[in-house]
Image 1 (cartoon, rainbow, N blue to C red):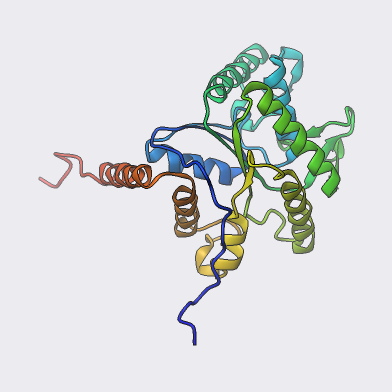
Image 2 (tube, rainbow, N blue to C red):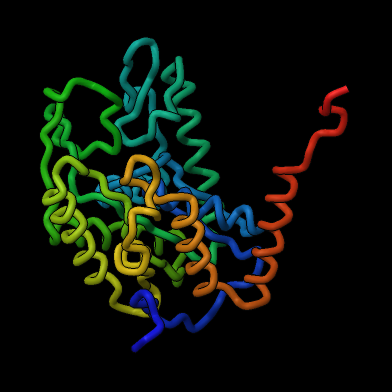
Length: 292
């Protein structure tokens, strides 16, 4: 009888591994941010999400098209709600009290991301959902509804073909800025529609099929974060209290697998050491804070 207690998921082989301090850009869902945080704590130079957390391929492609064309956001691209100015293309963290300030903030983030992309050695794209919300007045897919009335939007699911077209457009924009850049794509393991797991499965399936149709040369690769979570870590112990998001342990395991796969042994050792030192610093007691 085999002593293995799980079926390991194999990731495609990587020919050229990254050295410590490699430039990396990251775009997509909250899992993309989690991976970026892990790499940053290990000393990698990571620049992530110029529009904040984004879940769907259409919004991700639009932001990269703006970046590639050098399009800047203007005051008229924002709308006001409760004294704050928001963009349909950005996370709520970009909202400001003044439209001009909001535009300036968004443009600065884009410029910083483009500068990082121009010298990056790897880009990580994490797609999460095929379910999108179209703004009824404009017909555009929004990246964030910003708690606006549901009557302003149409909810629908993107087909595999629509996801594929968006991903290919995104890749073209990236390579317009950084030709030859290697891109690794992942599917977020987080369930976004717990009240409708059939919809969640359809959403993930359409995206997964589209991603694999775009991994058609050595520059476009896939890392199986979704499969590791669902086929290796298939136990509720690896989920958070909401039973939807990854537990700290699960996120750590998947991020570690990514680093093992993409970095040289020397870089991996340095990342482990940097993370160990960061954890020590976070738990170091403050002198003089004890009882008298």
